[in-house]
Every structure is written in C-alpha cells, then in structure tokens.
Image (cartoon, rainbow, N blue to C red; front, top):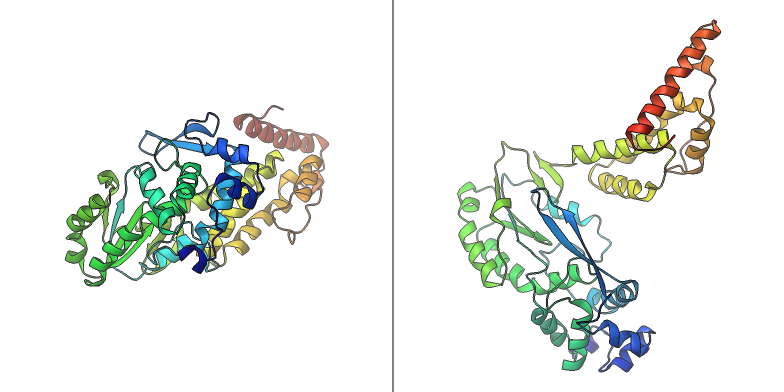
Length: 366
C-alpha cells in the first residue's frame, strides 16, 4: 500500500483524524464543511497589468490543519524532477536551482499558466488523495480541508504542493517531448521555462506545449509568453541569466538598500526579518552580497545620523547582523571644523531639517 510505503498517517474518519492532529472532532468537522463561514479571509492584491489577484487566507485553525497535512502527508510524496517551487529540501534556493538549469543555453521560451490555482478542480485534488491510498471518506475529508468553492485556493498552505502533485503528468508529458529534442524544461509553480542552443527548436515549441497544457486542463497566458534571444536581458523566475552568470534583480537590490536607509533614518526596524530574507536570497545568487550589504550599512557609522542619540540607540538595539559594530554618537565637530558656533548651529539645523523632511515624506509624524 502507498500509505504504508510512504509511512503516511492512516485514518478513515473524523474521529481518527482529530486524534492524530490533536484537535477536536467538532473543529475538524467544521473546517471540512465547504459552506462553513469564516474558514477563509478573501482579499485582493494588484498585478503588474493593473488587474487584481484573489487571495484566500485560511483562518488560524484551518491553517494549523493544513500545515499538519503538508508536513505529515504531502511532503512525503515525490513530485516531478522538473518542478522546483515549494519543495522541502536542503539543496539551496529553488529559484536559483531552477535558473541554473538554463544559464548556459542561448535561447529561452517563457510560458505562464493563467489562473493557475483556480484552474485546479476539487476533483483533481480528491484523486491525489485517493491515489495515496486513503479511502473515499478520508480523501473527501482531506480535499475539503484543502479546497474552497470546488477549486484550489491561492493562499492556502497546502495549495502550492498539491498543485505540484497535480502537475506531475503535465511535467512528464512536456519533459518527454523536450528531452528528445535536447530542450531543457523546468516549472516553478505556473512559470514554464524552456531553453536550448537551437533557436528554431525553441521557437517551434509553442504549439505542442499549448496542446499539452490545454489537454491537462490549463490555459496559457499569452500576454506573458516570451521568447528571449542572447541579445536581450534574460530573467528566469526573478533571477537574471546573462552570459551564463546568475545575478539578482537590480531593482530588488536597490529596494533592499532603500529599506535599510529608511530604518536607520526613522528608527523603524519592524522589517528586519523581511530584509534579512531578501539579503539571504540575493546572497544565494551572488555569493558576496552579504559582505557588500554589511559594508553599505557600516557607512552609516560615520553618517550625520549619529548626531541623533535616539537613532544611535535604535540602530544598536536592532542590528541586522550581530557582528556589525555598534554605532557611536558623534559630536558636530566630527563633521564641521568651524570654530564659529553660529556655523555649527546652522549645520545642525540643516541636518535636522533634512531628517524631518524625510520623515514627513515617509508619512511619519514628528
């Protein structure tokens, strides 16, 4: 049995699932009701084209159950070797590993699947659990806990991995076609990437991929389909790939510096974890980036911001990296050599005005 071979938890009713998840039967039953109110919170985020993406975030209790399903069931199931997104492993950044597969190829075709998660029906998820060896009742129960309005919701903890399982056949069919033609294929969620040194082979690939994609129940987003030649700037899943060298987005690196500048000037370090995440991601692409960003931060140690005791204290209390030196308070004489006190006062007033202007620009009350 698949359940036994993968060492998956076995249950056939609500009572047993409640026992293994250590939740109440009543809560499990409520969360598995398709029409139960309050299971998800719906909101929208803007896309680059001006439209909006619907996000359905599970309530805390449903999120806990979905995390249990992800950790104890889904992560134990093998996905296709062509899928790089949302997989539990210790082999480095999946975005980088995905981009690396294409780094030395001259021609690239990028295809995006439209409405990826909503395109995956409840029936397909139900079949996935059946194929793992769960009976019809348990499969229905698990499916109800992972779907919304008979589809896979974007925002649910389990959606990305379930989408990978559903796409196993899609990946296998596409890879089978590409491998015979020496074309490299990868998929990161809804981003399909193809590359080769044979220009005509890549250009003529689209019609067959479209046929396979539609046969598997998906639709290609034609607006996002791109053919990239060696002459253009090439980016794969957010990673720049030019001349065989991987680099992070210039915009992302510029935003990281802007976020660091903002927190040093304002004293608002609430985004420290987010900034550390960006730095770790960029460093996984560009090996010396962490060292460079530390050097950038150290420039503030001799910046006029050190004239403000509150900024100095907050910097030292919220350092991005523990091995960064402490910021020390400076005297105005460290920045101006004037003997005339009026000149010093004017300089301090100028620095104050610059900081206040920046804070007002950022919408921070003084």
